[in-house]
Image (cartoon, rainbow over all chains, first blue to last red; front, side, top):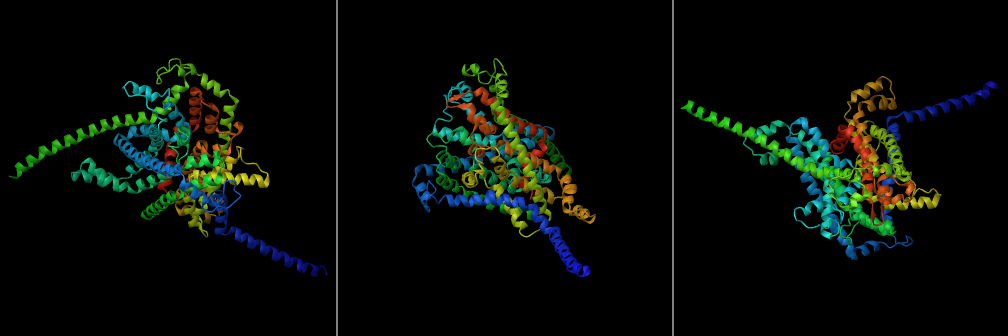
Length: 312
Length: 303
């Protein structure tokens, strides 16, 4: 009796054991372990990046109280506003000018650092990267103080050369110049570091060969340095284009979009409308206008990176 | 005939060498000259912060030479370092940054290990996706995220807006993709034989990660940690949007919203605050410069 009673019990036990072992097998399988290890990352990206991105699309189709569907009404409204076109124009001017000058200054400074004896390079590199290390919100405060309307240290210095007080943040054109200048100041060191790393990887023999062929310094840069650095220049510029186009801190602290909206870019204007003006749908619509240019830059970066992968 | 031509060639070559070394010397001099000019451009704002932080408000409003301190004083530092409010900002920033760094590492290191060594369905797409999320700026997501957290608050009663710990949820969206990306690069550079040997010796995947990969890729890990810390310390937009009460603010936002009262700018204290806010990243940079730069260049060169 006891024997019979034991029978189904032990059968169930073996079945359970087999089930457990199959579950253990699944858990032991390489792909399952890998998936579990990557799961927090997947959840994070899905809930806090992809979901909000689509939520922004949904928000952009609602009216201000978020009770009614208005379709493309917000976009229509934006297209009719002059400020919107001002912001588009300013964002493009801001991003393109700043990136060009950052790239140029970074390239030039990287060359000078590369020229000096290797012993001193570390010191100079360390010093020149400081603007990139300071949190931009903090360094922009220093610039704000340097640009102060009544106590500007720049105007104090310029007055010795007979140059009248410059309205650094008061006049539309000067304010645009100032935000771009601060952006260049923050971003140029990053280019410098990237280009310096790239310069170090150019084989010395190429320059020797060019020198033997009688190339002058300009030809050496144009025919040796630039082709060798083309990929890194492209990637760095595209990266910077994205970051600069989406910039917020510098404009927000330096001018807050003023005078009369003449320095607003997409991010600061979206903040002004969406958070300060509590018109969340309209703010979301404004920030969505950053997507096309970011997408184009991202596609080019991906292409360049996969190209690098194939070369290696 | 031949000897004559050789004689002729000799001197000209020598002259050319001489001119080249002279060119070198001049190039060096010009390099230093321009480097000094650029260093002045790059270092003026931080130096001006230090100068102003040592001035009393009386000296600042007297509009004496802005580049010189007549009566150096530490009153700004004393005022800020004894102010409970300011210490609160510093504390909030430190807590947020430390938690975010820990969280980031816990998420991104295993994920990077899985993506670089263990193929699973969709792993290549995920690796590209991680890189793409790194390219998405925070300025694109802050409005939907703000609304999302407001809705969560309404539905569940969990108030996340205007609490410092909301930043613990938000900052990883900025740090995790980049850290995962550069860790994938570092892990991929470890030879396959190393982990195969470990597996043959009976190590589990977890042991392979902790005993082999993390020690070998330690420089990359340090670079990623530094990156996560500097990003969470410097972040300005998210705390500005999500926190408003003065006891919940972190350094950058705290300094800007509390030290600037209406039109009254207490510049001595603002510059001191900005300097103290910039100090932790600068100190880390001063001691771990090589790791910092490795992390900076790895983002675009690895992978």
